[in-house]
Amino acid sequence: MRKTKELWVDSIGSVNPESSPVDAELIETIGKYTRQEYLQRSGEFHGCVSPGVLVGGIMVGMAQKEFSPEQLCDVICETQSCLPDAVQLLTPCTTGNGWMKVVNTGRFAVSFYDKQTGEGARVYIDLKKLEKWDEMYAWFLKLKPKHDQ
Image (cartoon, rainbow, N blue to C red):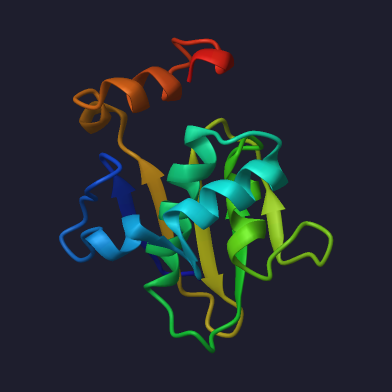
C-alpha cells in the first residue's frame, strides 16, 4: 500500500501544508532553471507560455522536495493539460519511458511515487484558496480565453 503525503497550492507565492511552504527559491528557480529560463523553455516545449505550465513547474518542485535527488520516481498527472509538460521539462519522467502516466481525472494534480518504496507526494491546487489570486483563479476556471491569459 502506498503512503502519500498531500501538498496543495493556494497561490503562486505560497502553499499550504503544515510541512512544506513554497519558499522564494521555488518561485525564482524552477527546477534547474531561473524563472525566466523556465518560461522560455516551457514556451518552446508547450507551444506558448501558459499559467498552467508555470504553476505546474512549481508543483513539480514541491513534490521533488519530498525526495532525495537520487530517488527515482514514477509520476501520475491527473490532467492532460499543461502539467504533463512541466513534468517532462523538469524530470526524466515521460509517457514514452513509462515513468509518467496521465490519468485524466480533470484535477490539476500530480503525484510522485518512489519506485522502490511506493511512498509519495501529491500536489494539487486548492480552488477555495486560489480565489484571492484573480489571474490564477480566472485561468484555473477558464474564465478567460487563452489569448488573454
